[in-house]
Length: 112
Length: 113
Image (cartoon, rainbow over all chains, first blue to last red; front, side):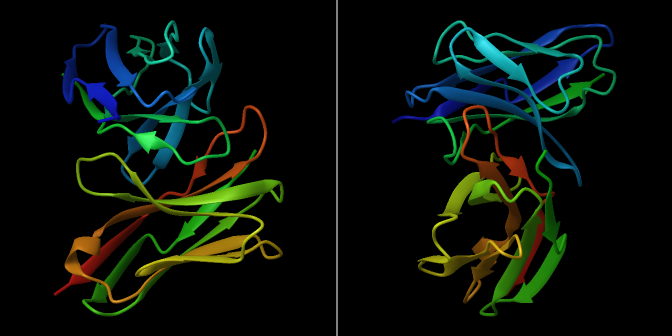
């Protein structure tokens, strides 16, 4: 079955650490996205990529980094520069724009 | 950039009643409007979408209406069931190379048996 997989489901980060969230899709989608979800804030765009080896900053890119070396993969690194990283992170993909996104099941990141 | 406002933030109905969630958008160039349902601890799922060349679209118990002049669109759920309880998000997007979906802040729908 085609789909989009995020891992891990839960992640704990110590102060000062970088952590990487995985996102893999086998839908042959060109575009991939990372959103952050906080209670009452909706979904806010962190980074997105329309093609391999190219990506753009979203509304809240500070403290995050991404890479797009393969069409299927779009990992997100939460760096120590992100001061408030505790949130639910959602990865999505689509056949370009404007089309609906397919979302993964999310990664809940907690700073300990 | 685009701004999407969504109301209400919470909505409680009795099973069998109808529920309506409304969204407004700011950019008249937006032409694609999807709705997502998110259950607790899961990612959002696309439930219905509408493009600007259409005024209304239905899929069984759910329907979406679009008023381009007023720049607002609405989700209508009829004969609500307890399993409809979830958070619903509206979104808007333009048809351009690097456009992305801008989401509303969500509506928590509670359907009581």
